[in-house]
Each structure stands twice: as structure tokens, then as C-alpha cells.
Image (cartoon, rainbow, N blue to C red; front, top):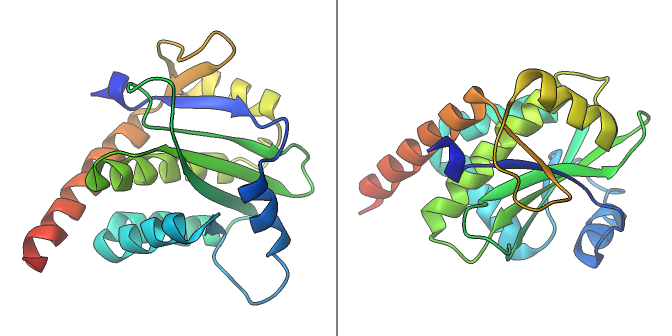
Length: 181
């Protein structure tokens, strides 16, 4: 199952319009450090937190950190990649990362992939020295296991914790869905 849940490290060299728009919304009311870049992604985050105690704990940990996580859904060139995380801003004064979740997929799969990537965000939040694409790569080379690269230009790693969290969240989401019916 680990090979199907790849954490791909990537550098967002240019900030896409949805993320740039979300960055512009940072001034204002106190909001979670985990932010959707559009209404659909914000709903995905809300649904995950509503259905999974583990996801609520992850978001709470991120909210207590200096890490800001922007989430967006996107089409990936391979079905083997369910999600990835990387830096949007690469300096240690303000750590901004983006999670990309593969879409369109089964909604349970999207929720599970988001939870899995949130675990990676917690891992990053726990080490303040991880504040650039280079330090992110070195961090996962140290704590993760290399996986098959999704593209020639991206390094891919997986951690046991993220694999386990993804499965736990999937179970919690399925349990919540069973109780809704």
C-alpha cells in the first residue's frame, strides 16, 4: 500500500493563481493554518475534519505551529500519485507549503490522501529547520524511505507514520459514512 501513497517532494517555483489568491486572503480573521484554495477544497478539508478524529488532531497540531498549509486538488499525470507536498515560499521567516491531492478520485480516496499529506505537514512542522525545498529533501532523505520517482525531476519519499495515518483516516471516514446511512 505504501507505493500507492507516495509523498512527492516538489518545489513550486511559481505560485499558481489559486494559491496566490489564497495567500492574499491571509489578512483578516483568524483562520486555520490549513487552508483550501477554493470552495471545493475547503469543503474537502471540513469534511475530513468532521469525519476523522485523527485529521482533527493533525490540523490542531498544524494550527499550533508556524507552518501554513494550502491545499488544492489537481489532476496528476499518473494514477499512482495520490498527493504531494512542497514549499510555496522558501525561507525560514514564514513557512508556506502546498498539498496537492489527486482529483478527480473517489471522495474517500481524496479524503484519505489529504489526511496522509497532513501527516507529512505535521512532520515538517515539527522541525523548524525544514524551511526550503533543499532542507525538505534532506529531511525526508533522513526520515523517509525512497520510493519510485513519479517524474525524473521529483524526489519521492514515504514515511511509515504517513502510511499508517492514511489507513487510519480511511477507516475513520468509512466508519463515519456508515453511521450517516
